[in-house]
Image 1 (cartoon, rainbow, N blue to C red):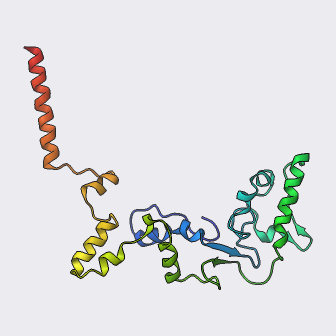
Image 2: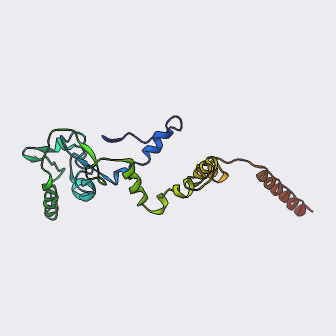
Image 3: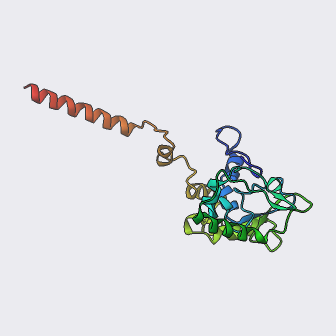
Length: 210
């Protein structure tokens, strides 16, 4: 999809594990920034390398005026400064906004050797660990909390625990979950309801005819 991640997996066959991992990308990006080195992989406008937002979100008006919206840091930076090209001249009221934009860029110290990398903000050295990600996830709203303690710490058989876990994650193919996936099973009950409706319509038709 970009320099950091592949496109979302949509094929239903053979990519179940990767699709599950890929679905956590928004969570990962909310807790990572980019450390710029040579600037080859980092997009100037669209990547989060300067704070918690990318520049297109902080300065949408300047981004709209930018002539090159997909340039990398390596293409935008030179020893003489930023190579920012606008598609038209600025109006008087836009000059102050551009000054604010360049002041925001003053903290950047320039390119250096090495490859750009993702920086996990929940670790003092920027390294992602599963334990760290798990702690952050459990700080999220209750809708993201996993009921693992109530399931795996209870003295029940492994078979029951596994089934309860799948049920809590809504992975069991119940009628309700099948309906959510647009898979409708015709049961005996449904057939009985359809038969009753048919009889009712026939009865009404006969009554009207009489």
